[in-house]
Image (cartoon, rainbow, N blue to C red; front, top):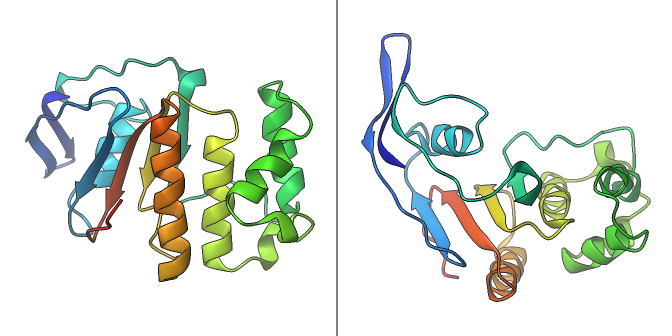
Length: 179
């Protein structure tokens, strides 16, 4: 991202933003609420266009995993059914959804409806969906915001493992988290 600017009406949201994320790096973008962190992710994932500047992402859409504030999960389906939908889209092995539920600590909740999950569990399920197909590039918008300290540490360990396996991770947060 080089000299990117974004305006919503008269409001300047991003002004001359430049950043460079290296392969297999965990890049953390910290800032207060309303600072434009989510807007940057939305531009990098082509959900919105920058008004000016240069944006280059070295991954095709199928290689990108995204976890945003809005989870994109189906509330009336259970955890496993949600992941099974995405596994079919990406033609993944049948065991992949259950394996990723174990990875994020939700194996015991596989049959629970998403609507009945706590915010933290919902967040872990959204993370499971984002990493289900082992993306090359992973965008995480405040991945630990609703998690207790112990679970947050577990997510940080998982992110380190993903990086070691070749995933580049771009995450935002309002507070510093030690990875």
